[in-house]
Length: 115
Image (cartoon, rainbow, N blue to C red; front, side, top):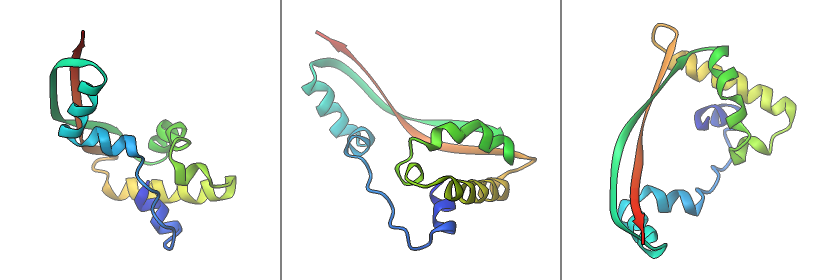
């Protein structure tokens, strides 16, 4: 999405990262927040997650609803949505292999016990 937005709006400033996102991305800070919320026996680790989908329009159809939760995309009108959607398909098709897109990311998994 970020690459598609930059392609359509090269001068658009990137949106600020929500504070909760930065808290959850830092293992030590997440641990402190969970302890502060009354959890103990914490287990926190990073895991690699893999998301695989068909490329092209199928990809866009599957994730379109999620785009509404992305601040920069949510503020656009219908015509702007269409332009960005086209750019998303272009990006996905460029990185696809055998008409499939595989996206890898690191996720933080945290489990604790409430006393």
